[in-house]
Image (cartoon, rainbow, N blue to C red; front, side, top):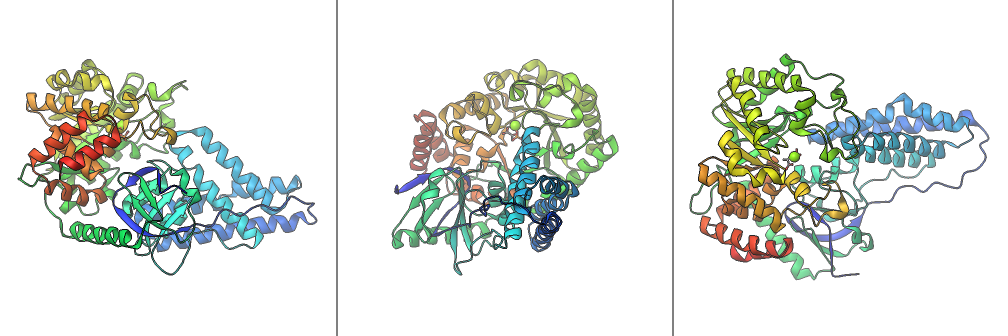
Amino acid sequence: MPEAVHGLGVSPGRAAGPAYRMAGPPVLPPAGPVADPARESALAAQALRDVAEHLERHAARASNPQAREILEAQSLIAADPALLESAEEGIAAGLGAAHALDAACARHREALLAAGGYFADRAGDLDDIRNRAVAAVLGLPMPGVPDPGHPYILIADDLAPADTAGLDPATVLALVTEKGGPTSHTAILARTLGLPAVVACRDAAGIDDGTLLGVDGNTGYVEVGIAEDVAAAIRLEAAARRERRAAGHGPGRTADGHPVALLLNIGSAHDLRAPEDAEGVGLFRTEFLFLDRRDAPSFEEQVAAYTAVLRALPGRRVVIRTLDAGSDKPLPFLRLPGEANPALGVRGLRTSRVRPEILDTQLDALAEAARGSDAETWVMAPMVSTVAEAAAFARRARERGLRHVGAMVEVPAAALHARRLLEVVDFLSIGTNDLGQYAFAADRQHGELADLLDPWQPGLLQLIAMCAEAGREASKPVGVCGEAAADPLLATVLAGLGVRSLSMAAPAVPDVRDALARRSLAECEAGARRALAAEGPAEARAAAGDAAG
Ligand code: PEP
Ligand code: MG
């Protein structure tokens, strides 16, 4: 066993404690002859009913609304008559209940994978339902999180929503999974619960129950078999962090008072749980309103959704991004033809080339909602590649009376032309998730390429520096709204590069606020210079840490 194993840090913070592994999925017995198909059908139906009820009970108990939604959706899948019908077909073809359920879930899973994007991300839900239903038929205990009776670090192959939703942050100190990526359930829910998490950590498979671990959700390092005094030091640090998180309030500032706005990434008004504490919204991903739709939402529906967010934040900045569809966010109603390389195809602002009326209606609705609220409404387009695209977008938005119009920098060409973009728009917002993907030609969903997608890559930092410099020259704001903004140490580097706002999921704000408050602007700038000059992401991270003292 190596002394440290490495994955992708997806939820910040450090934790120490003994490892415990989640029980594996039930193993199917060899297929045998079926004496009584009617009995097998009844068994399969009962198993799916049990699973649906179990998930529904879990959903009712879940304190986290996001977890509740996921569990409710899973419960509906388990109760879907099509799944039972599919299992009954297997039984009619000679399978026993357990094998028939296994085959039915596999078929539904394949269908989701074939649909791609967000649907493919939901394929894991079918695995979870399969494991639970097969365990129910075989009379095995339902797979789930262990309960050793004391706090521990949960190790798993991957975590299904049903597992993560039931997690008690007082008992589970951190999560380490062998699979998963930055957008997996594990990552999303760990960030929501404020638990440190490392995913795509393949070597975690070799960790034995009871081994003392030190987990770093920022760097993705998991130290295996640490000494008790090392664990005690990490626990002290984690307790201090919890206290600082609870104590910190107010706007983002460096130690010497230089303002760096801390804004929120949201998908709807539901994500604004404590709007009174927020400085504003830096990224409202409006595509969530368009998901799972056969037709685009109407003008009125859109006005209502945008108004709900704007009214919650009177006097504050709300940056609304127009529809970002295509590639990993396929939207069926757009009826775009299939593409060989969707990530390089008609996505983001480019969808307005083929369906201009959708952008027009959205801008009309945004202008109408802005007129009905006191929030400072900023509007920006995703996936802008050229100055001409930015200028055309700005014209369309300003014609409708929208006054703060910006472009996202997600394509290297846009970063290279940041100065010229700022001649036609009022602000830039850097989407580091896509900018990393396109700068390094590495699919952002590709777990094997996590090192190239590391936001500490000096090449990515260089592109961000160019945008920040252009903003300084033009005296126009440049912010970051990709995941890079949620990494506390990287946030200090971004501030040092000249970025004026950082936008992130709400649970990330306290750590970022704290990291900024502990460094002067000059220290942030020194960290930024060292990170830019570093050879690779690990060196950049280390150099920024040293510079910050
Ligand atoms: C990004 O690409 O960094 C970004 C914020 O947009 P999204 O993650 O929604 O593509
Ligand atoms: Mg993006």
